[in-house]
Image (cartoon, rainbow, N blue to C red; front, top):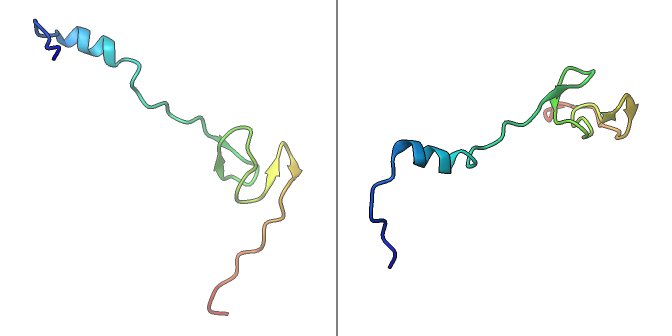
Length: 64
């Protein structure tokens, strides 16, 4: 089994791990004010590039 002969320095470990980070998603704000991902239909109002793409049903209270 392969075993390292010498201890890796903190610098070398950091260099190896530099590509392992999780990318922070880019967030834009829709005209309705909700945060959404770019190039996607807004889940709250259903618009994309100023055009209505989905009809979103009005939220109603379950007790009514």
